[in-house]
Length: 127
Image (cartoon, rainbow, N blue to C red; front, side, top):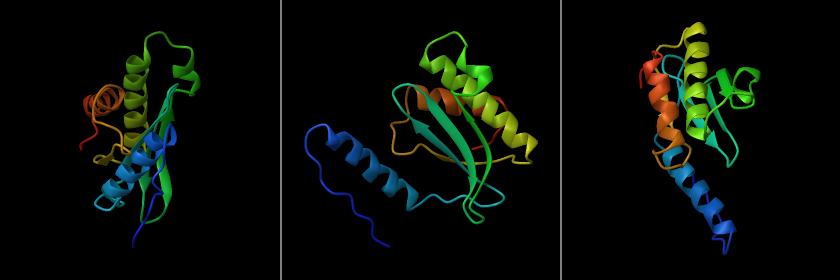
């Protein structure tokens, strides 16, 4: 199945490039019931993580910087990403998930993305 993203110019180029990278990653990565997909969505203000079973099409667990426990917290964006990683790992383990497939969503594995992944690993999720 072919997906296409129009070539953009100016400010829209960054978003189109992110979409192309995410499509390229999703060709190889899929979540199952045994190993669901841990999807990370990053914006300028926040970060969201979801554990998704692609076969059923259900979200098993999710966490975000908009959650009440994280929203008013202290620290920079990387510190909040670590909190999101710990929270999504706890919720996934409560739902019976031990191992996941990591989907960085086309973002570079550095900074907030890496902080979230490391915190989820420390909390007990296996990648």
